[in-house]
Length: 555
Image 1 (cartoon, helix red, strand yellow):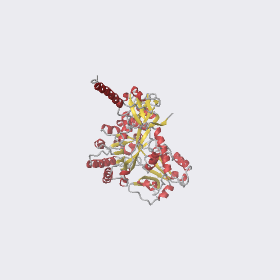
Image 2 (cartoon, rainbow, N blue to C red):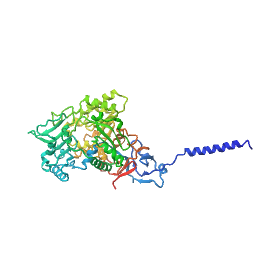
Image 3 (tube, rainbow, N blue to C red):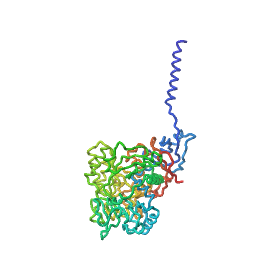
Image 4 (tube, rainbow, N blue to C red):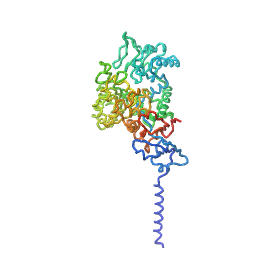
């Protein structure tokens, strides 16, 4: 018997070790804080019919897949959200907003939809009565095409703002109207000369009309007292509530205007509900220490933004050929090839990310040439250069976006807005490759979509509607303005989600519904893939979740 004991002991020991090993290897059950069920899920990297539920733990997606499988993550403390058959999509990422300008516009006079001179005057008069004596009237975002095309004049508003300085933007941000009080503060009169890259518009007698274009705007804008930190916080709080109501969970702020330090304070005090990728002016690359850059789940900087030209509506976009309605005018090219190449090369080598505004075909060509030269000098890098707007393209430049891996950061709403009048300025031939969404996609370019808010509404749904229908706002193009450039809903959704995340080097943490990514998602009233494109603008954002937390509900 004694000879059997070692065998029996060894056998029992083996069983014990196998039991302990299996216990250690057994997956510890993790229960979700929230599980979303009964929804039509859309995400760019998984087939829709494979997703029936999504489980969330903390601010992260824990699991996604069949309902039966995800039931194991539910216990008594789990909140189960019944989406009632509605559509769930990743949180929208608006790749082009002006955060402080937009937030401040919500605190100032709103002129975006004004369509006649008298309403323009009355709104400014009424708002002036609400201000203290030392306050300016700013923002505005007027659109003179809505009342027939006549540019406003300081004489319209001088009598109702005799002591209140006014400096209000045209909707595109490249032209302002200043009243006499503001012009006096800036020292602008009949003898003031135009800056090199701007224009002080004057009447036949040489008197400034109050319209200032491009760099001339800063003669007045630089005199406006800066917003206090408290006002900046108010503006950002207003802005983020607006974004959340539109299903936007992340934004790319393309001109921080000194707002990033405020964002840092808001982050530290848990006031942020929308994630922000913030840009500084490209010329400042020499003054920013790359070692001081910030990158976390909520705020991130390191993007630099430059300008090649102005805008179409103000005749400051730079074209190779003259404007159709102004034969001697080709717009304003703000940077030549040598300067923009030097800035991009040095900023890129310092570790910054680069994006540059380009509207006209000459501006886009010049910028693409500069990007190509930088890439040729350092072909091993993956800078993900961006062009903001990429609005009017020379057909020969369209394939270059893909070959150079340049991201076209575009704003679809502009297509259905500008489409009302753009042909008068540039003619039919150049209009064919205006907002060339489909041509760029067919050439394998990557599109990232945004709004340009407050120039346009920060509504991804309206942007998707614009990209898929190209129906202009005046209803004169029911089949689409240059319909060959329409794209499908899926491509538009990608541009507002995973592509926008990619353009900020954040595709590993957001932009799709996937395990380990941030639980940023939106519940929509309709399945965008099942309805007619023209119905998309009427779809409602029912709820917006950021990091698994409900931050907006329509109910």
